[in-house]
Image 1: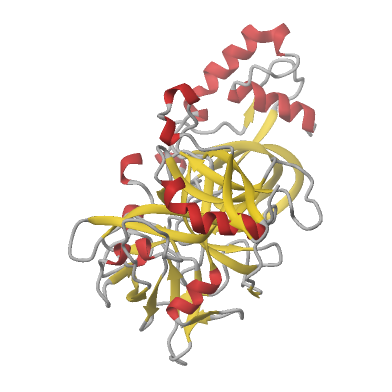
Image 2 (image 1 turned 180 degrees about the vertical axis):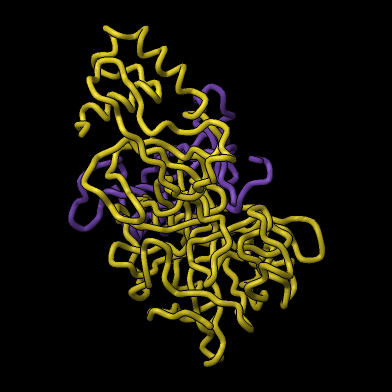
Length: 101
Length: 339
């Protein structure tokens, strides 16, 4: 469970580290569980790690695995922010693609 | 007079629908009729069949007939396979009257055609790119007389490697547009990209081109209409709409309003480089290649962003505030046709 502010801070602190992993195409903030009812205070958010393709853990090098929780320093100690890996495919600009002709 | 049911049966027999009720018992006869009619049914110039009132000398009669729609009416002497004035159909006691009506050539409608005035939602582009979408009509804060069209940098400015004054054509090159005949505007300004090995310092992929001379354009977006204003509110779960060159009018749902990503763009002076973008808005997939530059609006028709990228499962837009700030522009919210 994390708030928008905590997720934002996690993104700012960890964007480099998270985006360097294999297949990662983007980062963001989403509901911790898809379709979950929004709670008052918005305390059910997660850092989204968008990947080209979701791979089984045994096909990933340990340093490429996205941890289920990332830790950021808070005023009262460490804050645990959940992550969600979301398959997005390859991102492209969207003029008409020459290759699709 | 033939009843609608009889006409429907005739339509099924002539156009070969196997699903026609009652055809099971007379398939052989029906097939023979269909075969005999084939020369005129599949003749050049035929644009379809239907059931409607007969039109005689421009007047709509009460009589329902089998309609044969053609591109244009030709003198009988020039037609090889004339449409018979009546057709006999097995299982129908009376002869079915026909009526030939010219409706012009039927074509797929797309937003890739040349339109004047140019309409937001239609194909546009820098002469060196394929084609994107004319997003919306804007004005520069420091130019009370000029009118500008807004789209992506990768649509109007060739990703920022174009030069001020370059020709912008409607439709885009891929859709058959060419200079000088289809030039509607000249590239005026774009937000330059910051190329960095890491980080996400960029906010927009946006450019404007200035309309000039008799280069006509309107502020009313195809299907959606004139933007009601601008809104900076984007929330997860919110519905957005756009009208673009390829997928026309579609609706998406916002999934992430803090999206950061890196893409490869052309670098001024040659080569390509990494462009990290932050504060992007990720949506469900509601666009396709060619929709780049579409204005993204909320349900109350306020512009919230500028569509620019996507993946097989998502569509991504820039927030509108940094687009407007970066180019010092305002969205035109009244109905304007630039003369």
